[in-house]
Image (cartoon, rainbow, N blue to C red; front, side, top):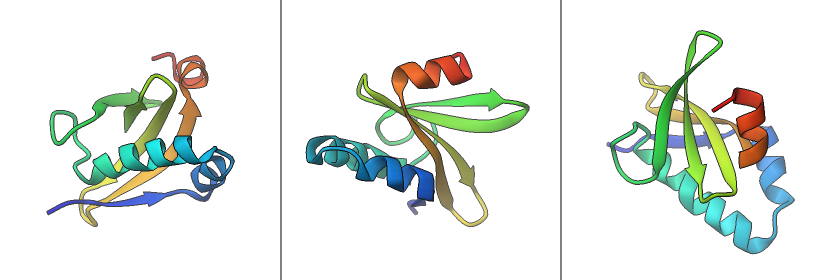
Length: 94
């Protein structure tokens, strides 16, 4: 059974500023998180430890990185941040 994908208000605002092509590409890739674990489904996903917490990331092309958590009980994927890839590497060092 697929997971529901929930986007934070900050991510929604960030997406609204994109041109139509970038919005379409990001939404298409975020939909891949209905199967959120690395190795499942499609997409370049990875499990990370950030400040002692389990967080996952999804690369969206060579342009953006989405960071998310998985609520296994509720079967929900929460997109916490969507950042340009360079900013993501600076912030998280990955």
